Length: 598
Image (cartoon, rainbow, N blue to C red; front, top):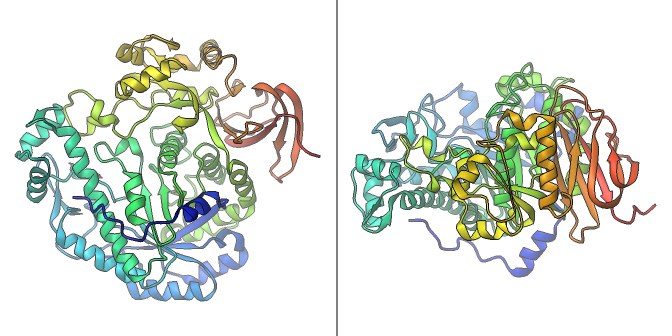
């Protein structure tokens, strides 16, 4: 069972208010291996701003992978002390807990994760194993004694995506614990069938009970780790590397529980959100720049809380400068801020790509050169709320699926079928409370609670035909097409029809509307009093945008932000011609009611 007791003294109301009121600075962190310190020091001297927020040292405790220098604790300790002596803030990432892949080998022989199909992993531990938890306690205590500011738990901290296990863990011990906690005893085959068929047994909805069981197992392990770290030093912040929410199926992150069990004495918890590794050759794929940033945006929105810092992970995978350009890397960092609302980003400058990333035309140099642009973007959204259309997503969306042939299929509900609308400039917010309209697509619509759907229908809902087939089309609803959104959305006529309908549903006009012939996404952030808006425009196209027209829902004075940080007037009124936006580049527009002080 999840350990629900508070692990630290409760944060006072004054402390919570202070944490909420603090302006979150933009952060950039490099994740490195504890090798070749001279190269890191030379890069720090040349590009001091690129390392000003510190470094993350990747560790591989308890694994037999790579060369000895990569996983040697003595070397990591010496590297940490060397960096700290130079005034560098050091964080540590324990790069494997439950286990990333069966291609790695565990040092200790823990009970292994077993899939619903009975397959047993070779190098992935059962997270409920007492022996495994005891070992993790020792690992994290050891690294806590190095006094890092943050200790990260890497993204293998999940119950899914552990090949050859489909989704785990269905070992004998877990089956016994599930029976004790749910009151329903089943064999592995019976449990798998009950989950796939969404069956009830003994008055228990098995699918929902199993979801809680998996989630609480992660929460309990997080508590074990946090207790171990804070027993050494309760100032150390715990950080979680979090994956794509739609890919976690029946064990999505319980962010509130993770924050409660892991916060340090100041109430701080960090998250590092990521979702796959793409390169320049597949930006529109299911793992591409847009899909990844949508997943990051959902996680950032779900994890926001007093004391929480949300960073992102930008993987320079496959650790080759030739597959991911600096322009695309910067674009992703800008999307992290303007679309997702993140507080900063982390990057990999590790042994396999260290020389390339330290070149004058590569990652560290680019971040040093363009850091001020990201600083300004983050400062512009501080204290503002993201407004627009909310594309429905719920962490329990898999519970609403019908019967499935495999556990993996349970989470495939077409929750991202609306993505073409992002490319035609519909402003999205991933924070439901600040949305003006609801967006539903495909079978994901069946997961919307009936009372919530009724409330939204009084305000405005846009659906594709597949969603309408699930939930109907009564109330203030616009339905486009007969099935799921497809390439038809991309045509000029269809895009205008959709945006015109959204204007009508919004009572006249959306908060911000963009019209252009290229693929253009936007995100709108508004001040609490509604007097100022910041509009991020992202050219997601291979062509420059030269015909962008931005239309607001009232009269504003508008300014555009140059790369050098200067604001330049682009007019007043409700419609503005936006200056050229280069391909795969962001633009920032500020709208002010009543004009800007001069």
